[in-house]
Image (cartoon, rainbow, N blue to C red; front, top):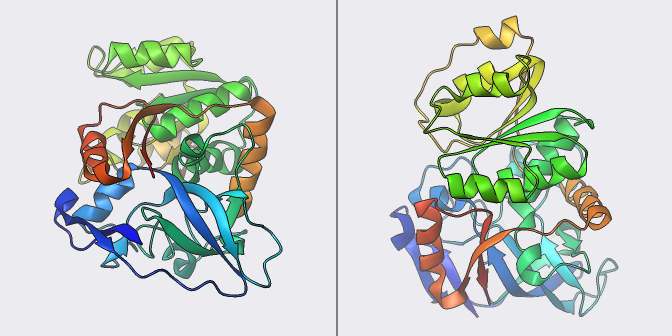
Length: 336
């Protein structure tokens, strides 16, 4: 079969399209013919090297995909031929709290990922795709959507009427916007693009802030919340934006620390956390149980993933390049 593999740490040029031997299907395994995959910022970090627990080389790229079951092992009970499925991001994290060993099984980094014509998975590391979603839409869910769900509803216990601040309009932020609005929350979105902010409003954002126009955007957040601040910040920037996120939060607010997209070497003082009783929680995707819970919420609210652009399997490098430009809103998808 053909597969895109990460063979070094040289950035996008570390991706190579290769012929790889097909895996055997064990008694508990399922062979999935991949139909679509999607990219996350983490995938750029993997090809660049240095991403924690994700330094296996060579490794089949990408964590997020969707496909059709084409072969099942003799002891498989969860799926049958023809079922539509998504592999989970952390292959062995089924439920409960994670461990270091579990987190080393992240697809497309720690272990082989999904950017291949077919892959073999344990039946335990797959979830069913909601009927109303296409393969392309379903392929956007395993990382960004589950991360947003984990942050807001598992860790954050989001309640109707609370206010959520989202930084930017990438995959996690857009999923968080859709989920928060479905749950009855108020949402503020930041971006440097007025066009993207307008699109965010169309998707339900209550307020928007252009952070180039308002560099001290935390002050605008307080103006928009009557001086109180927000209950939740989905923090995808990292140290470069964390200081303002802490200042934007209400007393007792929660900071869901997800990414390091900006200035990873910046230093942030802890005093706002202490004085305002803030809760700062690192979020790293989630378990299969979280994925299944999120899918139920998607079905109940008929949430449609937002896809910015689609590329062919042979044009995978162009998809990575598009991601690196960070001009997208929502997700970038590769079809097979």
